[in-house]
Length: 82
Image (cartoon, rainbow, N blue to C red; front, side, top):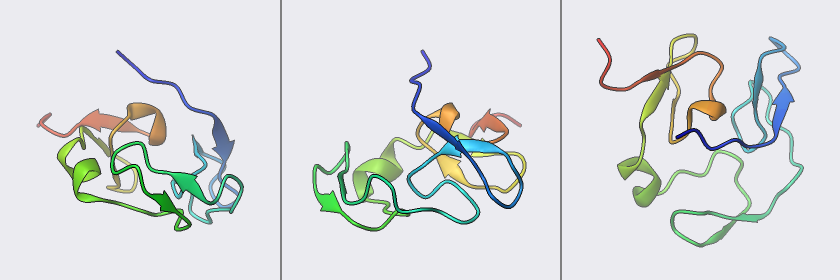
């Protein structure tokens, strides 16, 4: 099942990605926010916690970034895909 999040165009490459640190030049809208995994209020757009790492399921074929949801990446593939 895919979870959809609001997406934004990257000002550098124009790719669509979610707004919390998944752009080449992340913007600050929506900061601070409560992390859905560790439940802490964070101000870093690129926040990654241990709980989030345990749930990483996708990697971007374009940049190599990993994410919990495929909707957070430009060209997602499952981590375990060869």
